[in-house]
Image (tube, rainbow, N blue to C red):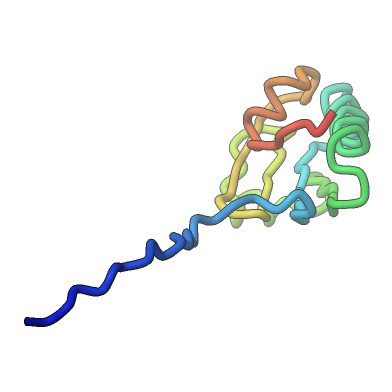
Amino acid sequence: MKAKRARRAQPRVTNAPRKAASSRYVLKLYVAGQSPKSVNAIVNIKKLCEANLQGRYVLEVIDLHQQPQLARGEQIIAVPTLIRELPSPLRRVIGDLSSTERVLVGLDIRSEA
């Protein structure tokens, strides 16, 4: 008769993806010249990024008055529009970005404060 060996419980290793605290954010803000909404959006996103993503973001501001062909390529239907390209998935927020909570939720950015 064969003796049964006791099985040791193997630790489970999960490969569930987690957002690293040091994730890099790539943001593009599409504006229309120096309109009040565009200027407010630029100021608001810079404040938000410095408060929540300090040192972990790249922000590119694109003026559609100077480069109108980019609106079609990115499917911009209203300005200002903020697009989070990285980390995936792509996210969009439209408006002057004055509601910090709405922008954080819309871009899936969790405040570390």
